[in-house]
Image 1 (tube, rainbow, N blue to C red):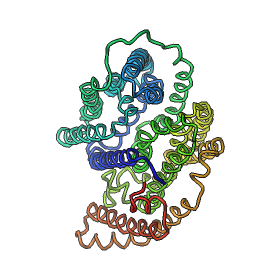
Image 2: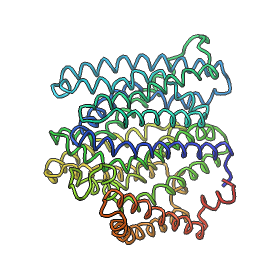
Image 3: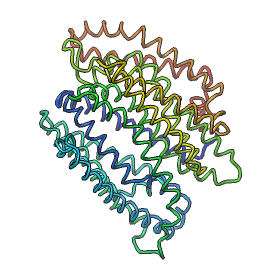
Image 4: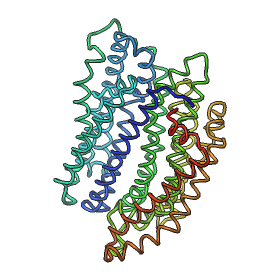
Length: 501
């Protein structure tokens, strides 16, 4: 499939950015887990989830809507400037209202009030985020700039965490370093912004035309955030000391890494999908959808296979707890196995929403689907976490989440079959899944052998043995995966080699 050169370049740049940030995350997270401990990291995760709801409320889905609208006028600086000013004013108002509502909740609920310090620190994220104008850079497809900026800022944050965070009491310092990423991003974006837009008022503002679509997107953002964060939030109430939240967050971490990689591509494809759908010839739109899903499966399928078979060493390394110490994260690798399917189901669902439904202005389909899914997830999480798996609520919540996501993606595919059916169900997908099975088998049989070998080589050092096992197993299975796809003439691999992507 022949894609525009800019799209291919942007995909590579964005994947590079995400991979580098993922590596930084994998380096810092085990350190933070060891230093803060399971209860403290559980408290941080729980507080961050609470703040996240008000961040979504503050945005009211303006970023996604702004990208779609700015793409249509990005060649006209005056029109683009007017759009940017309108969306900035709207987001400023909603941010102030959201923060006020958050304050009301904090001072009304005893458990929130007792943890107000960490909540207020984390809320800096959405108070400063209104000035980022990130959606302008996405609409203009400035992916190289965004990649370099993110890598530099996240590296500074990671180094600061290693230097200054030493004890569980440093949770507030850790929170400051995480929100500092947003603050530095805002400064960088504001310095670069005048090159693309003017802050001079360009005629009367038109907020009325935004009300209806923003209400729909706002409702989606609320329901989606409820769906995305309900598992962690409910688990926090089911488990008083938040230890189960810590275990769940470790198991989810591996899954989130791959989801972050696949969904990050929406930044590249959403502006282009919006442009292509406006054309009379919809073939480019369909090809872009297939290309996007192809990349997602190419990444997610082997990730599921390898992470499922290597779940124990992965979670041991992430949490910093080793076999000889037992640790408090013994459920984490089970949770990782249960949630592994989300790497495909959630990622494909994100493609359908951002690259199909939003360009088509059919967001309501996604709204109704996620609303039903959120209700189903909450009900199942409570039932499984409180009654069926009452001694291990994190496992019950994980099962509920995986099942709900499978239901959601099934319905979304049904409603968008005209655009997604050919992209997902084809011979190329069979090739990818076939090699995924081989990857799983290689990791299953080779992994334990490698661990025993490295345990001897590293004189019983579990950390080094786990790390060496993980790297070696992934390298071996990765080579087999790529060679196998090349032999089977899988579209993405053969196209890349021929430089015809």
